[in-house]
Image (spheres, rainbow, N blue to C red):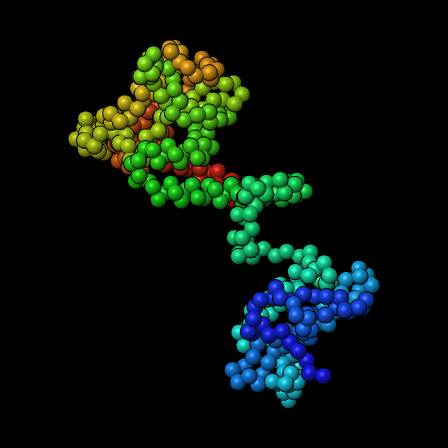
Length: 366
């Protein structure tokens, strides 16, 4: 009797097919019109005289009452008669590596069979999952979807502490790498708002400037001084609080290209002169006075509408701006003399803060 094959070289629409029980011992492959197929046609040569087919026979398993799909791959002529093996060969090899072998059609057939896993015994194949570049790209957005939160959490709870730590490290490593990449691409960005947004979206960055566990409270925080007409008042870029003591810290954000010193010498004949001194730039001194004013207004509580608890144990003031790498040796000396003389304000440059972030990345990589 002539065999009938569903031709995957013509139609990829496998929704028309189903696997139905023929009797208590066998299943059969049928389409919506009731046509029965013996398997799939996977490929055909340009002349049409060499065809690759897969014969499928379903037989019931006593172990789980599922039907095992038994597959036979054959190279046939145009009448579906098995081609003779070449002299000196034991079999005809079908590597499924080219379109002529029908590798696309082969995997479409496998995907179709997997859809019927409730009926077909797929053995260990059903329980095995391999992460590929494409599958990972499809899976990660689904895991991140808020609608899947409950399912994701339930399955994460089943993981060992080692697996959870590995996942956490992968997420943190990726996040920090992305921040470093954005940082380096914008090292000459003079848009203060850009940097404020970056720190707001990744508020753990600013936590790295503290030796104690400080946490982000708010941005553009109102410190006090507002009049009854709702005008005036003093605001700070960011406010942090010690998680344990509730002590408060004020952070003023400038940009990486903020000048830390003036360009010209104040004293000395050359940059390498032992007496070389540069004046501190007004952007830095102005920013520091801005911070001190914010702190003072906050302490005085004058006309303040905020409800944050005020702890008065030596508030921290931190100025972030400029780059050490932009300074000459003489400018660096003047900057360090000035910075280390300050009692109430800590100055941190962008490249110093970036190095702290890279240090965190190294920990995760290890």
